[in-house]
Image (cartoon, rainbow, N blue to C red):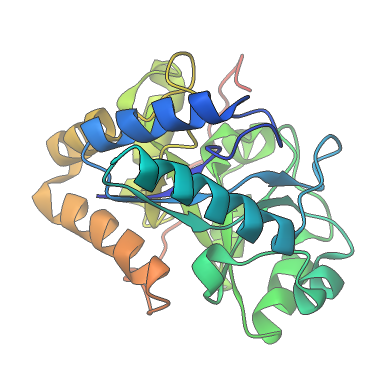
Length: 254
């Protein structure tokens, strides 16, 4: 199993605090059946700034420690970048890192809205030769209130990634239901842990894939797992024609 979203690098954002924490996360990932994991520290989210070259260096250091401990896990470089007006410039300069050096790039929205310029920025990212992947859209308040926002972005070529805990129900039934709605409408393409630690924000990947299989069948499991492999290999992922879903309003989401 491959996990394309994690905060396993130590001391650089709100994920692992120390190398000991990183190693604990690595061991837990292996227990979940994960063999490769992309480190995606926050960048430009108002609190953390982690440029691409630094992430590659930190990833090499963690891999050295993991190998020294004999943990059968490979950490790959990536980044979770909050959408901003300088993304194209930073992509061109290497400060925004793609996922494992591929054409895929994570884009994070603020939790409570989608910026007005998001559609244009995602389009321009594609014009520059990259494929934007919107992270955890199910946790965005505006998208919850009006799913057509996400439909329009996916219809124009963006991909999306659900959080494993959302589909597993760890974040609550309402969020879980909305995550399933996105799967059913072909509005999402990856499941990833967004793990920050081994306690409050763990991997939950096994639980998520079990729930996915129960609700959508084994073919959906194979598709989502296969897409993670295709992504790290820089290949074209599988996606079906997106469908609009009815407007829903869920209260109390983050």
